[in-house]
Image (cartoon, rainbow, N blue to C red; front, side, top):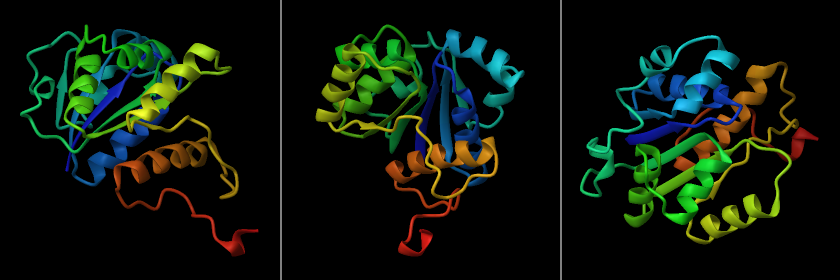
Length: 187
């Protein structure tokens, strides 16, 4: 499997880091792009650098590298995940505004009919955010808001993070055991 993973400047880069850890362990070929704003959030929230996350990916690209293979529809990928997805990036994808590598790769993913999964991390949402998400959902984009559940009784932040990452993996079609699935005996 070949996946594009993008981290943008929304709070919640822990989700992107955890997804990269899981994909790395599963030996998935990942193509990573980190926005400039995400670099700052990584330093603040994770107290690490983008380079530490790049080590988890098979390939990484600068946000302005519009010659990267992932900008071409002839370069086959299975899916793209933007995790976390800022409202700025979500708006750019909605409008087809491809002025950086993340936006161009998302545009290519859409035009080629491949899976595009966005994990927005914003609250509260205004009507513009909701309209953009609705427009993208109408195009087949999977919207996975970073809204953890509690039925699996998470014990810590990792349990909450794993739920969102697990739901993201579900959208890709990848097996995992990051959280206990709901059963009628769960109640």
